[in-house]
Image 1: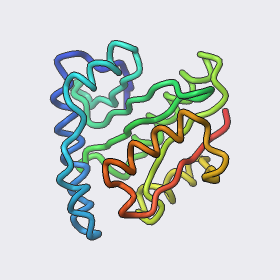
Image 2: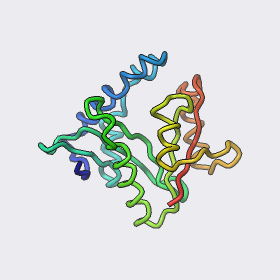
Image 3: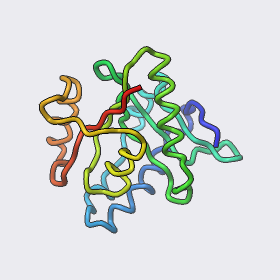
Image 4: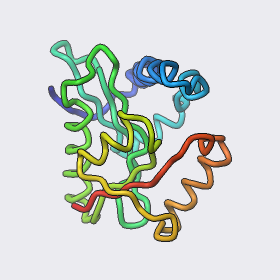
Length: 168
């Protein structure tokens, strides 16, 4: 699976991928997450302009998964990684994470970080298999604390969440 930068015209496809990937949250009693709207086109464009939006593409060069990230403190923070369900279970998410790790290392950052649900099998348990470890709440950097505060204000703390870090 080839990974490349996201093109401007593909931003609506990223939203479609996110909506499709979110559908599985219905099955585990999290309909609010399943129906939550993806980031706006303007927000996605900001990641693309910063060269921090990557797509995994099929043989016809169409995105089937994506990852967006931003520097937070001394890490590259994964804001979102989504794989269309038709392409799940093929290590595409892991490949995108590895791509982000290579970029972070090249940029001189010391780790990847993310926030995630602890009790969703394809969230924290998956990221642990990818080498991420939970960060204790008292050990959050100022940037991660700001992200967690924003998530709490958005209502995401109705379900257990954690910050995770993977050293590079």
